[in-house]
Length: 311
Image 1: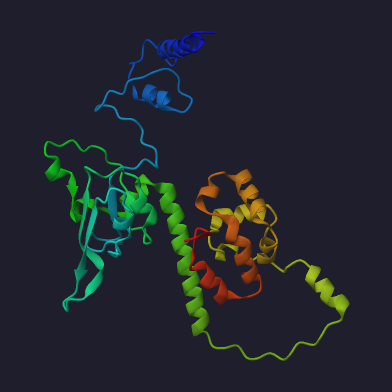
Image 2: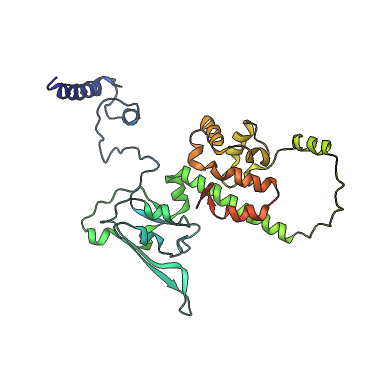
């Protein structure tokens, strides 16, 4: 019917208009209270609303991104940035410039002496943060950038870009937690490797006496004496380990015999957000090495992984 689409569109507009007055309206409460604003910004919110900026501001989601920032751990002089230049190479509008620092002998060092971003042409794509191998550059959420001189105030230098890791953790809590989990797993793996290398060699045991086939088969089918530490697998933290144990996966051998699709199903049924923290595709391969006691091969494999994914 001619004009039916126009009538439907006007109907949607009218419905939103009416819901603006009927949804969550109490005559004795102020129209633009914080509770009213928060409810209207919810996914299930109805009707149209007006944010009374700057007195009121919209709630910013965690993955909102704006101008990049440089992360430091303890003090602003010790940035995570190694001045590798990957962020500048992948930047689509080429708005990043880096100057590498040099030591007393004139040799380049793994730190920047200058770092600049032209915020006027930055498109906030996040490529610099995504490709940084050291988690040194992240996306800030500060959008209050009103200025009367953009050539002066929108050209960010290293001092203006530097932010503490605590500030980043406050803006992006889930991303920070996932990165810390991966970093802690790598540190634990290196510590275990160092301890194993420093430990005295174990005395050679006498060759085992061959067992009859019946006893060997019974030993293979018997259940393990106790659960393995699944957190030794790259990408598995305490929460994911408890989920796997609840699903009956307690040993490296059981994990190695479980397909990646089944592991994804277990995580999805427990908490869909777990799939954002890690990818179980490599877990069976890692678990097979751990079950066979091939720790050096497992460590070499984990050096190429980040959250269970190929870095």
